[in-house]
Length: 80
Image: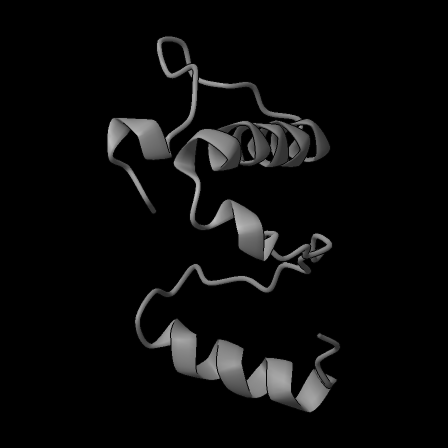
């Protein structure tokens, strides 16, 4: 979301009270795709979709999957 210079200055002023080394940094938004509704009811079908989405996001950000964390996060009970 574009931010006006005045708003940016206002926010940086407020945040500098919390941490004196606060700096502005532009962020790029990733494209959003909703989870297909039929996958929400079927964890076996959802897991490959989740893994693929996470891998695509990591490639875009230039990060790798942490070692020992392969497979669907939902199957391990993590949903966050």
